[in-house]
Amino acid sequence: MLSKKTIVGAGWLVSSRLGGRLIDFVTLLVLAKTLTPTDFGLTALAGTVIAIVDTILEVPLLQALTRLKDVEKAHLDTAFTLGLLRGLVLSLIVLLAAWPFSYFLHDSRLFALVTTLALGPVARSLYSPSMVYFTHKMSFREMFIAEFTGKVFASLISISVMLLGGGYWAIIAASISSSIVATIISYVFAPYKPALSLAKVSDFSGFIGWFGCSQIVSALSWQLDRIVLGYYISKADLGRYAIASDLATLPSQTIVGPAMQTAMAAFSKINDDPARLAAAYLKASRFTLMLAAPACIGMSLTSDLIFDVLFGEKWRGADVYLRWLSLTTIFYVYFQPVYALALATNNTKAIFKVMLIEFLSKLILIPILLFYFSTDGVVAARVVVSVIVYVVSSLVAHELSGVSVVAELKSVWKTAVACAVMICSVVFLRRYLNELHLISFWELVVTAAGGATVYIGALLALGIRLNKL
Image (cartoon, rainbow, N blue to C red; front, side, top):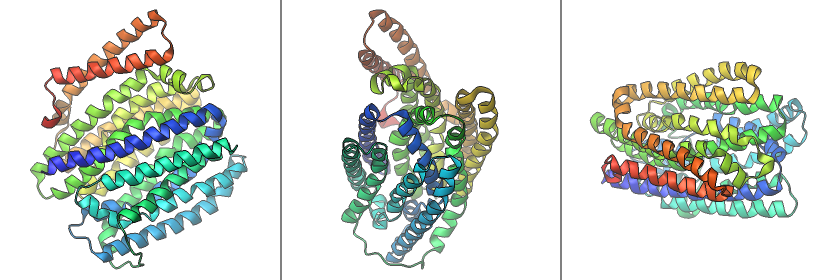
């Protein structure tokens, strides 16, 4: 029963994220036809400040509540109060940091952009804590509606701002409006009367301690490449790099991330049974790679077609970044089930360990390779760091679940074989289609459909069935 609920819950969350990302993607395409890479580079720079502060101050209140067997009103009040305090502190830090940041990068426009972007994470801080009751029941339909509706409103508002001549403010509008709408809808589905209290803060403090440290490191690591590049390259080039980087993470954010939310809830219910927990983790890691690997490899093999079809001539050059950055996601997604396992078992120190190694690796490699190879060097550094994160995640998974690295590799060999077959078929198909001189759109459609068909066929031929995972 637990497995069935987990799959259904994952289906709702993946659908939510997939639908939301699809709307985001369509909005991006509309904006990219009118706005310039410089506009995207400018907003990407503004977003680095918000991303760093937001991640550092992230308090996983819903996850903390999910771990509790019994959630009382006092727990909800404490969660709301912590979220409110987070929002206030975030606002203050952003206001203090906005001017020095704009001065350092010699662009006064960044002050207004940074302070406005802060509205998004502040709104998310006030998300209804009562939504945890749906998580406990493994019912994620309500989250699907809240997030999807937020994305629809954000798209309409963003496109309207663009049509009214708002320029890069259209990108900002999309970012903040989705969070505000989703938070409002959360109170419609899960009514909660706000009350200020820290009576149950002890039930959150142990969970947040190491997690807070890991978030600080993660924030710096996540935005390090954009901060460094923002100082040394033009905003147009940064815009191309940022778009390629965002596209590369789509499989992780759209498919794997939401699925692992349900995995975390499932792990929490069986964290007192080591054997079941190990089996569940192994299944989750295998499922993760099976979903993410073909998508990442497919983007890498067709990156030139993706930018030709979807973005046009002014984005030329970004396809090279996507070709390599999409491959790094294969290694990074492997950390997702480890992350869920660590949260479920209250071993957030393990998360900090992985994040710290990732940050130190980037801190060493990115400046050195940037000095010698410019932006290509930064891309190469991310490839190397992703492999390091994969190795460390495997070792941490062994510590938490008892599953050996060898056992994990054995569990994914069929997926690896299916991916290899897909790669060969796509390379052959693209050579054949080049001789037909098809336009880029049809070449992308045929290649994507052919690769997906071969991959699914290979999985079936190897005996993999979804109901047997």
